[in-house]
Amino acid sequence: MLNKPQLIDLSHTIENGLITYKDLPAPVICDFLSREISKDIYKEGTTFQIGKIEMVTNT
Image 1 (cartoon, rainbow, N blue to C red):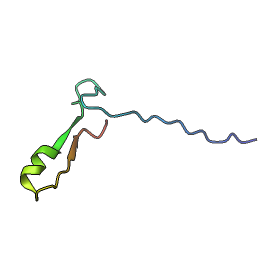
Image 2: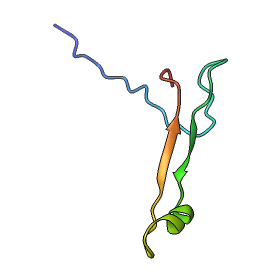
Image 3: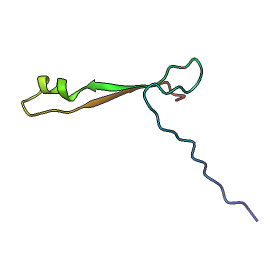
Image 4: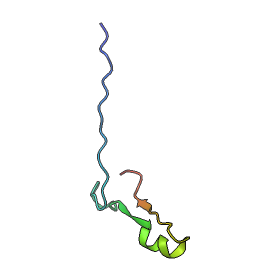
């Protein structure tokens, strides 16, 4: 009888500053454009946030 394949979830939550491997840079999660700054750039009453994530692919 054949064994049924098993799925093992290795995912994890990525957070700003998370250390993954020695000597690799931690991910940086920040605003690219904040709601406060968008108020000054776009039409009155328009606000939004755009996030930015930088990380090495091994993360």
